[in-house]
Length: 428
Length: 107
Image (cartoon, rainbow over all chains, first blue to last red; front, side, top):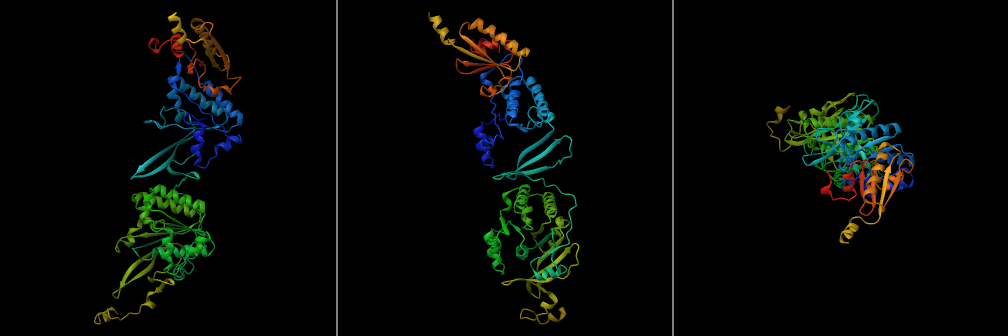
């Protein structure tokens, strides 16, 4: 029962959500009754009730054996009729009546000041109250939903973001799950043989969350992309969120280190989502990530990077967001690789401490200056549940791919023209 | 004669009124007798009242946008006017039917 839109408008408006009301009406699954109460053409004299509304509703329910009723927006009646006390008692009777008819009813109302609804009535006679709001923080808007009350049930009390797009509405209840997810013992390759070797020879645990942090240009994306390619090579789907590069850029750049992602994109095992982190707020980002994961059902997920992704919120926000994301991925046993850009070399290990507790395997890549040369070093800060190497390996990006070289074997003290002859011996 | 002419303009010959009720409730009965009285006094001989019981014909409620009961709908003369309630306040009924200008009515 629409109080604000005529059926034609309603049909046109929800078509953008992929609902075909005409078809539903044709199949007798839906009936739309537009109720229009025009104050200017109504005079009130004496006692009345809303039996007319009841009759209409009852007739509509009977004609298609409806199980659900939507009243949008009931409070319009208060605008059309002046006797608020009659309306209040009649609406209370209406709620009772709907319940007796055994139909589930959704009643929309606008939010009032200090009360959840303008007239403070609906919220108190309803069994379940869901509050929707639309907030703009730092120019980013997020729609949120919160269940305020739900009689006879335990319900989540948190606010959840929700999305409205061409596929309809998705609500994303992203709470920190209980720590009950399974712990698979199966391993998945990191895509880099030597790195697997460092991880007791077999790679990451399936369902693990892996963090690769490092300063700029240390090859974090390369490690992540290798994981994605390895995932596809096993015939599994991988979802790659690139927040700094477009899919084409990523493919081109990875080709330069001998990794071709295009075939995996072509056979639909790899999906790359690119978006600027500033496009959405934190919650919405999470929601978008969720939705993409639900749609694509990947086995592996790469988020590259999480650092400027989390820069769009406060530290607490981003930590809780990451926790929820990690929990969500774990509950689906999705192996996840996050990259994180850290600022200075000094802050390298501290920088991600906030998130380290939720990470299973943590790789650090950093520039190392050694013997007057600058090279990349990679080491494992931690890797839960497995024996792992504590060595710093040299990390090379070559046209043939990523190589990790044991320092002791790769670099015997080198004497090049750059080294001062008299300093060399003291190094020994 | 001029008086009669202007009177004709204000009160055209044909008045078509519909009273929507839902069963024989006290309010409906009161509304009908109040309406009958007003019509006899002011529109004698030129009105027609149709009573529609929505309990018998629920499908008719939608057409005239009936929400409240009882509702009196003035179908003719146009424009359509609605008066809801038991029509106990004669002044307001007259204002609602535009048989009396609003300024004289007790608002």
